Length: 150
Picture 1 (tube, rainbow, N blue to C red):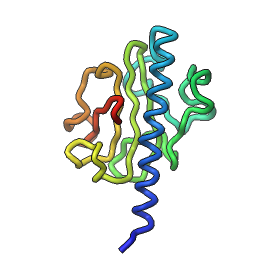
Picture 2: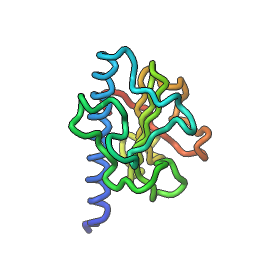
Picture 3: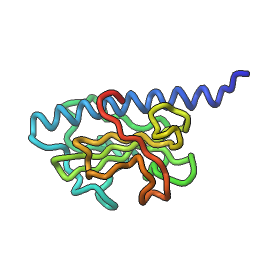
């Protein structure tokens, strides 16, 4: 039996993974040219910026991307939620490292840690140094840590 809504969710997840690859490439190019990643102030709390922001939501990437991709649903500022209803991309950087997070709709995706979570996480040089693949401060939610092979 074909489930149209599941197929659409998988298609949106494929777009999310591609968007994250595109953003990562642009961030790396920016870093090569500027010696650091676009700065939001840090890694936590008020320093996160989200794809729900107006315009080019990661300042400085304009020369590297025609438009910084946004989540296909892009309906909430915080992509990490207890329910699978909030979708956006989140970015934070203090300069030498960055964290980039997206919310997948399909928990069984092979890129989620132990196939138990919904989140896609990219970090430069380990970002904050924390391992998002273990239950931590995000209400025991599981994240995946990935690199170029996203």
